[in-house]
Length: 165
Image (cartoon, rainbow, N blue to C red; front, side, top):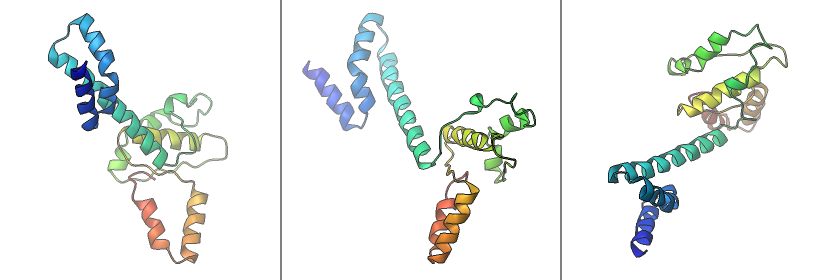
């Protein structure tokens, strides 16, 4: 039992919290399945990587200031036939971000502009692209206020830092 605790402590010291947490369960499974040493190690490391990716996604989503979380799969293209689904799916590849192109959603209230913008932001975050979400009215008001307070340069940095605004 001392070796098990020592291994768990070493995993924790290395910052492998998830691996330390799952060590007992993986050892138990390994005792029944008889995997190779490398297979066992890879299972433990895969669990650690998956947990880190999950936490990373959560942090980047929080920093993006999304008003809610929606995906393209949740969007009803049948309800809004004027929207070109193929074009939206192409936007989800994020090639427009790498080409430094702009995308604007225009239309009356209730047609899904915000849903699509949030869904594309979620997709960008999942692809490792930095995102900051703000409505145009909020952006204008924030920049106007910063201008009157003589701190526009500092405030603009918040909006130009992410790859996708």
